[in-house]
Image 1 (cartoon, rainbow over the protein chains, first blue to last red):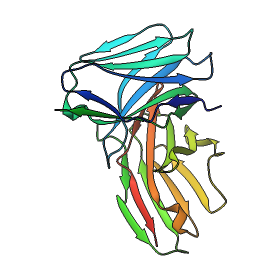
Image 2: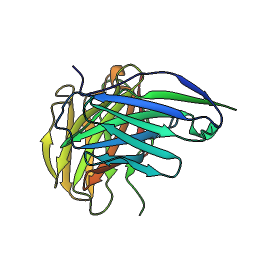
Image 3: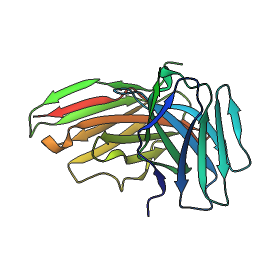
Image 4: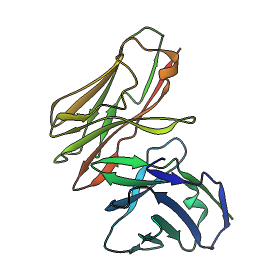
Length: 108
Length: 111
């Protein structure tokens, strides 16, 4: 079983809608979770991180943790075409375990 | 801060040649990671260091790959001899207090 799993997508949403991205993790003891955005041909960029003690909101982005079901969500409100990218979920257990990423397409 | 710096940004070499990739982490960061990314295999962790000491090299594909971190501000990843299947984007990343930041990557093409 992989440490972190994501649906590869693509997830298509219209501009202005809410995009919801999810990933599941296998280790119930995981404490810190990260979301990276990667544009085509670029490096992953850290956009959100949360710890096991709660959710986090930053502008249009909200990261939520469901410990009982062992999944992490990233919500993007008012999606823009510039949000079109691959979103990578990661868990830090000393070393980082990354999911394979979900490709998001925001259609104008 | 300048962020993680990697060089070269692009490298094209012939099979059998030695390739050296370089990385300067963000000042003050105590962890350094080397990743490889391909379409087929996604992002793979090769090796990581803590305070210049290699902690886990289980992701290094074979003995042709080696990595060093002689000081807190410099690391190298060497492939000798290189093979076409080594073609990928190699990322260096550094972290402090659990937050990891990536460099721009080196696109390696082995012909």
